[in-house]
Length: 127
Image 1 (cartoon, helix red, strand yellow):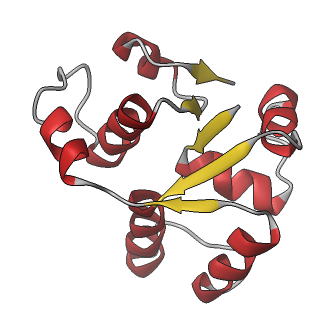
Image 2 (image 1 turned 90 degrees about the vertical axis):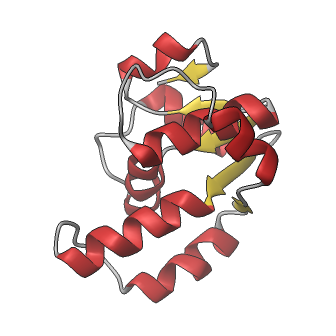
């Protein structure tokens, strides 16, 4: 299974947070799984940390090591993503969520997220 972790999913996973569902944790830990973190999620974390809206358990710079230790791959944004994004309906307006939705569609990934409204986009969603 190829997974794209939502920003909160990534943070909860690396922090061992109990808010992460057992189903999500098992999917991420599956030895057959390939897990991606969008560059947009890293950007979102950096912005929220700099605004004081998010506190991490470790310095932001440690995220790179956490990605490596967990075997997570960074998923870049492509022009193809932006083309598809321009056609995505506006079920909601959060720009980071919209990027993750389109990346899951464009790359055929299962999005691991607690956000129930993502289902309105007809994507593979797991929680």
